[in-house]
Length: 243
Figure 1: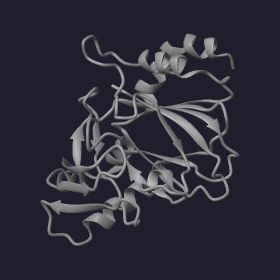
Figure 2: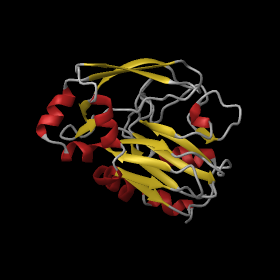
Figure 3: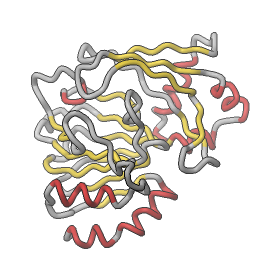
């Protein structure tokens, strides 16, 4: 697909994001960073002087690829536990990924629809979860770090009538582990209960990457993670966090 065709489809892609929260386009021609950034910004409703995309110390475009000397698990060969982006800094509205290199054999991205989990949960379960606060802590070895707290159940900031689940798996790897403290419940099975929900295949979409793939996901409604890279250590993509 020509990149011009992709940019022309922004209105329909925005509509699809509003209803489904996850869109995928395959076979897009290679684009430079400037074109990709302009495309990403077209999904933001932010008005000047507010930025349309999130900037970190590395800039607005993050290159995700394997590093044998990685200090953080995101760049390792390991599985990446389910999480959402920006929790330690500023939560993005959408995440945009453009795949530059991949064999499609390993390193699949896992997307989990938390709005669906909450729609299927009983009123009693939702009420119980609403009373719980999670606090995550990690050392800054990459672009993020520190401590943050969140209610388990929150309203979607752009669709207040939708409930979202704010639960990330504990990161136990030696590469930048993340610790979790739970307040608001004495149930020793609380973590396992929620982990079981987010790992349920019913709510999971698995994306096997190929060059030219473009994926845009609602970072509030969905969690995401990654299967181990395996032999697919050449897998790389660019990621932009849209505000």
